[in-house]
Image 1 (cartoon, rainbow, N blue to C red):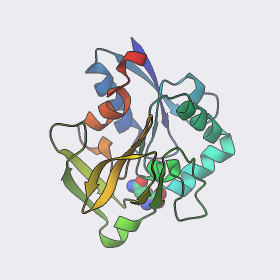
Image 2 (image 1 turned 90 degrees about the vertical axis):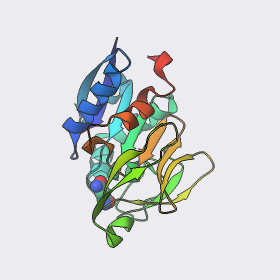
Image 3 (image 1 turned 135 degrees about the vertical axis):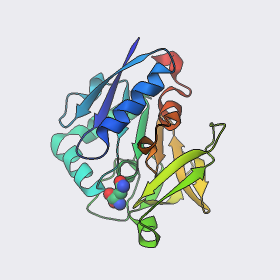
Length: 199
Ligand code: GLN
C-alpha cells in the first residue's frame, strides 16, 4: 500500500524529510508518495503531513497567503498525522512569542523562537524519547524553546530540563531536526507509531 505524504516546501530539508518518510514507510512494508506543498489543494489528498524547519515567519506567510493554513487545520481535525520540526513546530504551536508568526494552534504549547539559539547556535545530543528504545541523535539548529506545554499535549522528550518533543493528538512537534541523520525513528513514531491500522 502507498501512503500519500505532503511536505510543506517553502524552505527546509524537503528531500531529507522525504527520504526519512519513505524509509519509515518501507519499514512497515508500505511505500510513500511524497508531494511538495506550495499551494492549496494538495493537503486534502494527503494521509500524512510534514512541516519542516526554516524560518517560521516565511512559512507562516506562505501558508496564510495560499490558504494552506486552514487545510492543515482540517487535516489535524480529521485525526491525520503531522510531524512539525523546528520552525514547523513554531508555526504549529499556539503562540510563538513573535507577532510576525501566524500560528496554526494545532499543538497545545507556546514556543519562544530562537531561544536556544541565543545560547548556542547548533548542537547534537543523544535524546531519550518516549516510545523509542534507544536514544535518538537529535540535531538542534537555532532551535525554538518550548516555553509552556498545555494540558492537551504530552511531552515526549526533554533536554536540559526543557521539553524538546511534544505530541498533541495526531501531531508530533520537535524543536530539533530529525531529518539530519539517517535515523528515521522520529518519522516512524509520528506517522506509523500508533496509526498503522488506519492507512
Ligand atoms: N529559529 C528559526 C525560526 O524562528 C527556526 C530555526 C530552524 O528551523 N532551524 O523560524
